[in-house]
Length: 113
Length: 111
Image (cartoon, rainbow over all chains, first blue to last red; front, side, top):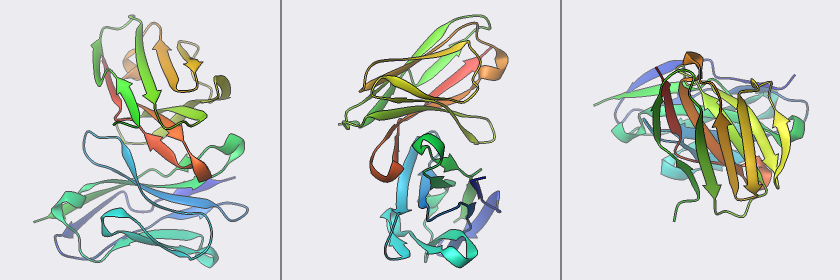
């Protein structure tokens, strides 16, 4: 069955430090992979997506993610975190049945000034 | 110009009442979704519509009834509200490669 896991429920980093958020998936073929960010009280915003080609994907706000087929992973990275990056981050995979997307449980990021 | 809009943003109501949430997208997409986000931030798909036709109904109670008058609108009506319905409800529109575009959410509190 298709699924997405985000092993870290909550991560705290200092401002200026590097960040890596983990995402693992289970999918029978090459998936579409997504990272979304949800700031407090807001809707979800697409950070980046992978659907083919270069396995290192650049997104908005200085984020990047790398698709590693051998590890079934799509980890999100940022070299230097800003206080405004504090938010909930969701990894997602698709398409599944009826072209829907499955979201992971989310990782909550706190940033220490 | 907002791509996906929802009204209202906040909804506080008593148990047993009936309420509706409206969603509109101006992206020209054929497929729209309703998601429920619980207090632990878990996102659960409820319904999807493609060009006004129901495609997905994820075993949601019959008290929830989506309606799509045209492909740009997907509304959600909830009858006999229960405490457990308290959550944030997100509308989303789906573009290429299943990319989801989310509305700002409707925060429903049932007292």
